[in-house]
Length: 156
Ligand SMILES: CC(=O)SCCNC(=O)CCNC(=O)[C@H](O)C(C)(C)COP(=O)(O)OP(=O)(O)OC[C@H]1O[C@@H](n2cnc3c(N)ncnc32)[C@H](O)[C@@H]1OP(=O)(O)O
Image (cartoon, rainbow, N blue to C red):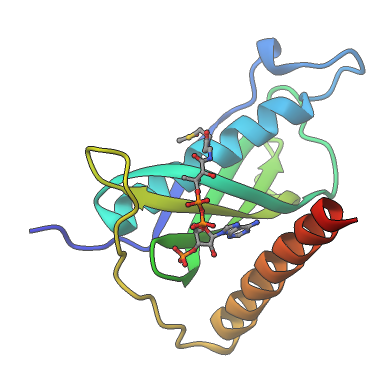
């Protein structure tokens, strides 16, 4: 029987092939890490194949450098019917210094689907700590803003 798992963490070194023209890690590479960690988190929570619906509020706080030890933490912060809203935080450090600083964060939403690609219900997640309650509200706000802004664009 599937036991929902709330969080995943990836740890690896940023490689020379991840570099952009400015010598830092490419933003698109960071977004791929975020998508992969959030997918693993959503699949672990639902026990199903999951599809990305939306990526919101992605923030680039500081650059990731080639050779940095990167940690990508993804955790469920809200669930709906079929949707799972995942908060992802990326941290990086020179592995010799072991002083991880946040480089990125975002909210990414997945839905769980069955073998036919149809939406399926997911188990509800309930926040317990103050931080989790704040993150849940943040995820709800981001979803509402995104849906409202898209509706305004389509109706204008
Ligand atoms: C693993 C991968 O990388 S998959 C590849 C990338 N993803 C894709 O190609 C997906 C392409 N998109 C699609 O196929 C469709 O848009 C779908 C299947 C994702 C959603 O289709 P719809 O049925 O129109 O979505 P619907 O409006 O019912 O919303 C589904 C859920 O997403 C939520 N949602 C919709 N828009 C947003 C948004 N902007 N932000 C957050 N959540 C949203 C809804 O609230 C709903 O949640 P609930 O089930 O918990 O109530």
